[in-house]
Length: 293
Image 1 (cartoon, helix red, strand yellow):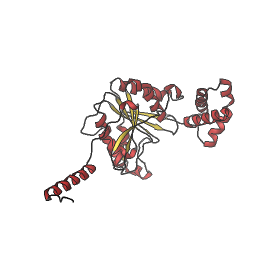
Image 2 (cartoon, rainbow, N blue to C red; image 1 turned 60 degrees about the vertical axis):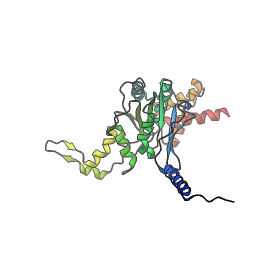
Image 3 (cartoon, helix red, strand yellow; image 1 turned 180 degrees about the horizontal axis):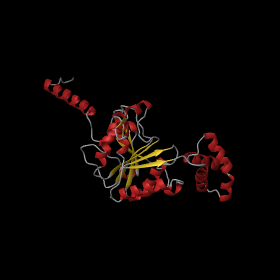
Image 4 (cartoon, rainbow, N blue to C red; image 1 turned 120 degrees about the vertical axis):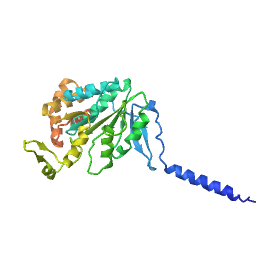
């Protein structure tokens, strides 16, 4: 025999069920990850739209010494990162230039170099940049130093992540958080597409000075908010061979064996129409794998 609920009790149950459903869609504070699980984290969104930081269990074991033929770029990034880790003034960084020349690898190598000193990395996809304020709020009171890493960054007109990043870099009413910097890589300097017709918006003054139009100014403004620009360039044949030799050496090949591998390394690059550091590494892996079988 079932007992019928009092109308007031039924009302309370319905109210509780309604509140539970409302709580599911209301914004919730981001949960803290296990900070001891890794030195690198990825920001990921769930199907319910809520985001969180996930530890990267296997961080790439790249060292600064592994990266060849980019000494100038390495010095700038390493100096800025070291200042940051020591609590000294440092800049947000934009690394731009040819693909496969070591932009992302250099950031990973810095993480491995300074991770023991408290440096941490959070990788954020372009589509999730609108959540940057929540991520920064989560880590703002932590003792570690955090690089927010945005790889292969570029925007199309009207994308919401563009304005979110622009505001975080320099322009929000909130003060910059001293334990967070943005490190971004891109194949293009100004991050937004540029069109020939935009050249028509340039104006000339009587004294010959040139002023870009508003559309061009908007596209340049995001890049200018990065305090440090570091450019990467395509490698020459000799530079490519030097990088390939370094990776072959890391796989245990002797100098004479590395010299004998040069013709194959050049053919490998020719087939891919590229002499990048990435191509050199891929060649070395293939060459080492074939010789091991």
